Image (cartoon, rainbow, N blue to C red; front, side, top):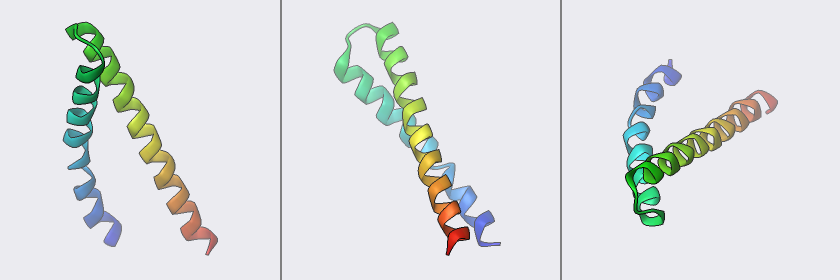
Amino acid sequence: MILFSTIAKIWYSLPLIAVVSLCYGATRHEHLREIAIHAIRTCIWVLGFMALIFLVVVLSGYWI
């Protein structure tokens, strides 16, 4: 039951990831197309990294 209450809090990270990706892309590029491409790449990278950390935490929970 605890997992269901924390899943709702995970949705708060999506706007934060989008804003951070856009700001990071805007500091690297000047054109809107390049900013958008860089933001999408950064967003995918951050989500992948978070998924990897989540997987490690879940697997370590089964290990112990």
